Structures are given as C-alpha cells and as structure tokens.
Image 1 (tube, rainbow, N blue to C red):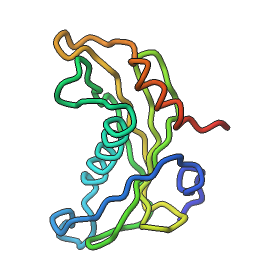
Image 2: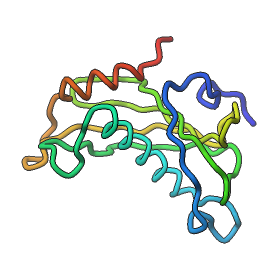
Image 3: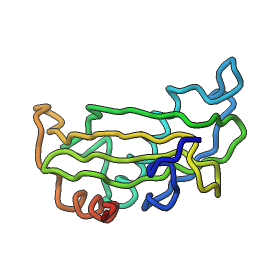
Image 4: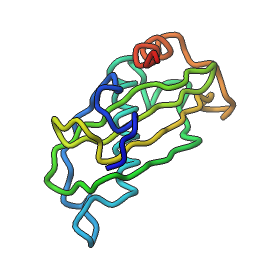
Length: 146
C-alpha cells in the first residue's frame, strides 16, 4: 500500500461504523467502487444529523455534493465491519471539504480514502447560503490542525 497521510487512521477525528451488506459486493467478490461513495455520504449525513440536529427532510437548507473522489488501496467485502473516518479539510462560508477514509474495523491503514465537498443551498431557491452557525460549529470540531 502506498504510504499517504490520508490512509492513516490517526488523521481522522470521527468514525462512523458500517456493516457491509451482501448486495454491496460485485461479481468480483469485493465491494463495488460506487458503494464507497454511499459510505461517505452516510458518514457525513449521520454526523450532521446526530451532532448538529440537521434535518435532511425539513431544514430550509440542503447540502449538495459538488465534488467527490476516491482512491482505492485494498479491497473490502461482505461481511467486513468497517469504520468511515471523517475530518474537515476546508471550511468556507457556504461549502465544506471533507476528507474520508474506509477502514476495516480496528485497522490502522485505510482500504480507501477520498474527498467530498458539500455546498449548502436554500432548498427552495437552490442558491448557495452561509453554513448555519450550529452546523459550522460541529464542522469546526472536525478540522485537523496541521
């Protein structure tokens, strides 16, 4: 595995556990690459709902994913227990850049890592808005000071 700062568990501030599902596997017997993005989305939105009280259905704002990428280092497959590492790399006025990584439960090195950018927008007008203070405060807790 290529040594990369994003592949080490110690650079992430929060971990979200996920149990892989049989349907996540592809015909090659490992988790399909598109499923990693679902894991990223789940970890981010779970963090926002549980830590900031963000209501995905009812809040007047939504977070749109405007960019995502993933680097794959090693395969995972059902029935692996995984943990999605989460941190914030950049926190702007209306956007946030998350760094995420997929770890087998308890392992120090990631199977994959990537980024995910949310832009917060008004739900009705679909125009960018400032990140609400309560959300910004919990996102600041995930900033990694380098």
